[in-house]
Amino acid sequence: MIEARSASLVYEDNGKEVFACHDIDLRVKDGEFIGILGPSGSGKSSLLYVLCGLKRATSGGVAFDGQDYSSISGEALAGLRLKNFGFVFQYPYLLGYLSALENVMLGYPNPGSKTKDEAEAQLRSLGLADKAHRFPHQLSGGERQRVCIGRALLGTKRVVFADEPTANLDHLNGMAVVETLVSNRGSGSLVMVTHDPSMLERADRVVTILDGKIHSV
Ligand SMILES: Nc1ncnc2c1ncn2[C@@H]1O[C@H](COP(=O)(O)OP(=O)(O)OP(=O)(O)O)[C@@H](O)[C@H]1O
Ligand SMILES: [Mg+2]
Image 1: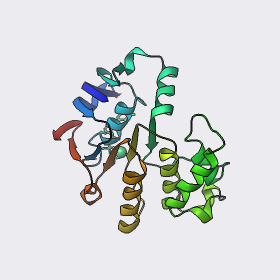
Image 2 (image 1 turned 135 degrees about the vertical axis):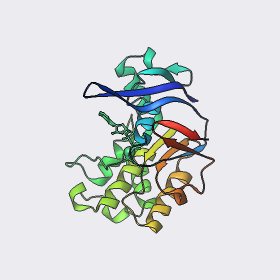
Image 3 (image 1 turned 60 degrees about the vertical axis):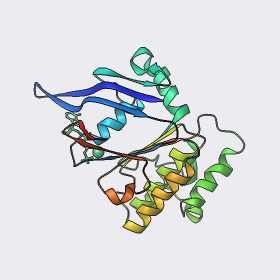
């Protein structure tokens, strides 16, 4: 469904090329849970950005259902992401002037009468039912991250990308968040970056990244 072919992401740093991703060949199949492991700076976040089209590969290609990201406009690519992908960023980005519930509802491209109920159900399953009305600054770091997870899971997403979703949580809450991602993703795929292998016990496949390259599949 998502296919990366020799995909590279090169940054320029003081006239030098930095390969954040280097010749990545990877397929994400329908419904599978792929874990991405690697040390800091190895290119894990960059790989997620390239796979979901938040960044375009500087060489090679990435396609979703046969549609290459480089062949469509930025606007069409944004529409494709909104409809099909959920994203949990490494840092919990929320809109400060919206409540937790309203932030979760942003995950839905076409809000309808059931959106609020679904958003409330997501917050409930993330243990935040009594905090739905709070603004982001009234939540702890881990709670904010869980709101981001609710937003990523809202609606039926074909792929949920999660970048270190458990980094701000203790082990038990981390395991609970992974469980929520795994069991609430419906028939969608899950691509999750972590530096903690114990969070990937339920993964179908674990990919290790070193210096922007896939080390083992
Ligand atoms: N805008 C940028 N310009 C230049 N180099 C960058 C830029 N963004 C990232 N890099 C470099 O690309 C490489 C991969 O970064 P990336 O953020 O993907 O790593 P990561 O594996 O997610 O690290 P972490 O575990 O610390 O989040 C690093 O060497 C980083 O310094
Ligand atoms: Mg990262």
